[in-house]
Each structure stands twice: as structure tokens, then as C-alpha cells.
Amino acid sequence: MSEKGNIEQNFSELALFKVSANLAPYLDIDFCTSNHIALLDDPADKDLEEIRIGTLNTEDKELLKEAEALLGKPINPIQLNAYEIENALSRIYETSIDNDLFNEISLSSSSKIDFSKDRQPNLILQDILSVALQRSATDIHIENYNNDADLRLRVDGALHQVTTSLSPINIDRVIACIKILCDLDHLERKKSQDGRFSANYEDNKNSRKIDFRVSIIPGNYGQEAVIRVMDPKRVILDLNKLGMPKNILKSYSRMVNYPSGLILTTGPTGSGKTSTLYASVQNMVTRGLKVMTAEDPVEYEMKKVNQKSINEFMGFADYIRSFLRQNPDTILVGEIRDNDTAEIAIKASTTGHLVLSSLHSRSAIGTISRLRNLGVPNDNISSNLLGSIGQRLIRKICESCKEETSPNKETLDLFYDKPPKSKYYYGRGCDKCNDTGYNGLMGVYELFFPTNAISSAIGSGAPTSEIRELAAEHGFIPLVENALEKVHQGLTTLEEVSMRIGPKFPHA
Image (cartoon, rainbow, N blue to C red; front, side):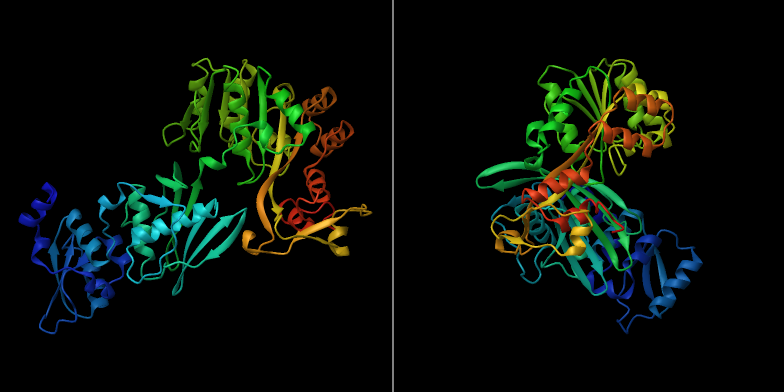
């Protein structure tokens, strides 16, 4: 027994009471944790005239009155310390998990979901994580509803329901396991908490480390968790393998060889921006350049790259300022979110550094208006922006059930004035694609880089619409056109393009 356990056994008031899960139905766990109280007697015991309750403050009359009303019997407050109350609540609500179980999480490509009754919560979690990796899921959604608990996996950008042994009875204990893995407060249920943990995954006798990022929030019916799966197998560190069109790849590769300037990637969450940035950085490392990154957080550790995760003490702008004193060749900033970061990123690109970053805007050309909104002067944009690449990830038609089809007129009108003579395909649905008709993702890209005329227009404050017209005159191909090319190649569908990118003529 640990020293702490000996102290509790010999000196704790808690040792005088029979605290167990039988007490759980009488007081809600949220009421107990938020008020730091624990039930010590069974209200069903008819021989007891008073019910003893452990509390930090025996003089809190309002709290004691509320607890008495909930129990329907007089209560007798007992002074306990914070550790004793936490220990009691762990026993009552069975959120206490043996930490030794989590020294190593064992995930396997051969694991299956076990529906055995009373299965331990750590084993339920291992089943969930293993199945998520087997199905190449990017996110795991553990959701709490009224009298129901759900698990959904995001595969190829779409959510899929999975039947598991999760239930309203054990979901809190499974989430408690997740919190312990992340070293979070497993009794805190009123506030959101974020964390991360790692585990080894055995895949056909090969083992690799998987990182998981966790977000836990309180809901109407209990806690909910989303786990982001950071599988290094999905990280592409070669620009030639991202799937960029040849003309875009050629221009972008030339761009990342510049000694200074600002290059931006743009698109929504899950559009592959990090893959593009990492592949760009890897290209520089092979050329012997010093690269420093500030990320939120580091998603994949690269060799010979000085990577930093931002925190409450050091934000993006703070790290860039520090990097400038370290004499790097290239600086990667995870995201430009505010004026301070935009300003220092521009300064870094002005002083002879190549700066790579991401920006949330709907299109590559939209980075101009976004930078303006962040307070970057027009002349700084025109003189420092080398280019911006817009991207999305769209689903590929499953090759195992691919069939020719004829889109209806309404769908065709969303994309064409006059439909081209082209064959169209869809996925019928089969075992290999879980009856979705799609299997795998591919990138769709657009690349905007200012010519002399475009730079002059940006510097003079020309509106984005005018810049877009100029870019079209100089050969700019919008994202939707690249996506339609994939449709004509039989790789995806018009419905998928409409859902992920949007129609070319939305008011058709």
C-alpha cells in the first residue's frame, strides 16, 4: 500500500464510513462535485435518524439546507478535507480508475468491440480507439443523449455511427479514463477540458505511436468527448504526393524555394493545410535550411525541425519574436489569427525570412481581404505576399463499386452553362466502402500569386472582386474548376463537389 493509502487508513475520517456505489442514486454527482460534499450514510437505512454528509464547510447553512431537502431527512455535517471528499466521490460514483491500467494502452488492428456486460471502462476505451484506427478515422465523437450514449467516427470527412458497449451507465467512467490518460481532473464535470495522450498501435506486427488530442465538454445529459486521431501514417511529407495538379505543383515548388516572403495556405478545418505546410517544411530541411515552427499544438514531430507548441505563456507572436533572434531560414506559424501575429509575421518576411502560415478564408484570393481585416497595410501585403494556396479534401469514388451514372438536370445546372460531353460515375456502395460509395480522400487546390499588375492593385487598395478579375486574366484557376476536372476524370461526383466546395452557380 502507498504511503498516502496508509495515512488515509490510519487517520482519515472517511475510514469510519461504509462509502460505496450504493449511495450514488441519492445525490447527483454534479451537485456533489460543485459543492464539495459527499454522502456518507445510506438514506434507506430506517434506523438512522440523521444522515451524515462530508463537507469542507460545516457552517454553510444554505448548502446543508439544500442537501437536506434533496434527501428528505435531517443531516449531520462531518468535516472532511478535499482529498477525502474526492476519494469518497470516486468510490460512490465509480470514477476511480486504477492508474496502473494506463501505464501502457495496447491498441491492435485485430481488436474487436466486445459487448460483454460489465466490461471495464479502460477496455471499452481500448476497443473504441483500436476500431477507430482500423477504419482510418480522423475523429472519435463520444456523445451523451437522454437515455442513450453514441459513438460516431469521422471517416473521409463524414460521420459514421458505430455500435459499441458504450451506455448511459458506463459513459462517465469511460470519459474518466480519458481524463486520467490526459492527466485532467476526472471529477470536474462543469467546465470544458482539453488534453492529449499517446498509445502504441500494433498493425500487422508493426508498431507505431499514435497521438490523440482530446476535448471534453459538459452537455445537457452529461459529458461529451471528441478525440482527434493524429496518425503519423496519414502525414504526407512529400509535395509530389499531395495530389496537386502539375501546373500548381510546379509554381508552388518554385515559391517555397524563395529566400524570403509570406506563403499562406487557406481552407476550413480538415482541409489538409497542415499536410501542405509539413511537406513544404520537409522540402526545406532536405536543402539544409534551419526551420523553426510555432504550432497549436505540434501535430507531427519532424526530424531536424525546431518545433514549438504555443501555450498560455507563449503565443504565436511571442514565438516569432523569439525565433527572429535565433537566425532561422524559414519560420512556420500554425495560424495567423490576430493583428499581433499578422504584424510580426510580415515583419519576419520583410527581414529576410521565408514565413509559412495558414489563414481562415474561403479562397486563396480571400487571403487579401482577411489580411486587410487583420490590419496589415496594403503595401505590406503587396510587397511580401508570395502567394496563397486554397485547398479542400473531397471523397473519392470507391473503385470496387464504381458505376456510370447520369446526373439530373438540377445538379448539372449548378456547375455548367452547357454540360460537357463527359462520363459521370458514382459508387453504388459495398463492403469495402461501408456502403457509402466513397473510399479515401484527395486534395483539390487553387494557387494565387500576385503578378506585377496584381501587386499594384493590392497596394492601391483595389477591392477583392477587381483582384479576382485580374487573377483570372493572368491564368488563375478557381478551386471548383480543379474539382470539376476530378469529376471528369471519374474520381469523384458532382454531389461531393457541391457539398465540400459549393456549386459554381449557386443561384441556378
